[in-house]
Length: 180
Length: 180
Image (cartoon, rainbow over the protein chains, first blue to last red):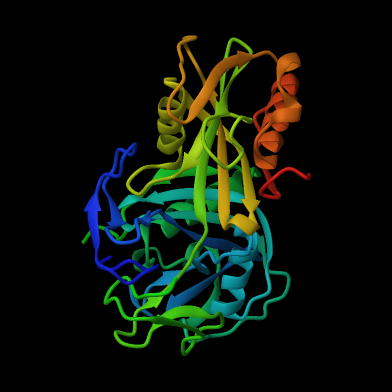
């Protein structure tokens, strides 16, 4: 951030009075610009035991696999965001279910919120965001080519909970990218 | 938003290519400025059955009661944010526990994430953000003077779950302010 989005003058990084962290502050109009984590919403769509995965068509991690997920917008719930991403990325109409995982990706300033979901019909397709979309049995999941650690964390808990007949939620902190 | 925070030139509101929502786009440097919901983190600190509440010293809803909660910062987890807010607003060292509630406040572009918490010692105090801080038994909670619907929602579920001996989590969508 270099300029004030309110008045267009340069901002400076300093600790405002009564605050404890440096903020971008406009020296002209006085606006304080707070930077906060953003929410990534997603879900694990399950169709008769198989899971819908997408191969990413865009960076970061183009060519790697993920379940549908993306930035939450204003004016929607986290569940609505997860359903919207399934439609946008995979042309898939899902029914979002219980909370599966909340993953802090500190270095990316993101909080990933993932749900279980039902994919009632095996209807889906590619999109500008997905090179391939497909249903994967548990034995066929491309673990070596999963796009992000948060996605792997959620998938593994999804499968373990499903096998145990439970629907728990899981917190963790994960790296932005898999280890090299 | 009027100006590009990257280059200082005016932004315009339009739908970028490949997108489906209007965004603030810089006509000069091309930066697309996404606006996303922000997370409010908080917790219900319980000391031997009584709950720690703060009377707000700042707007909005100055003079009304809340449990400690505030904007999540970058580089912290939601639980760390909840503990930090307890310390800042009430000088209270808490141990954050299980997830209690996720409340969408659509009109404010906020997601409120609240936890149960343990307040091991009855040590707390006022702050620049709190006119009064105190421990309240269930019968003494000032329901008519609770600051926000999301806070009331979480408090009521906290008490109901505690009475039932369970620790569930609850989703809802709530208004920013109580009805007039």
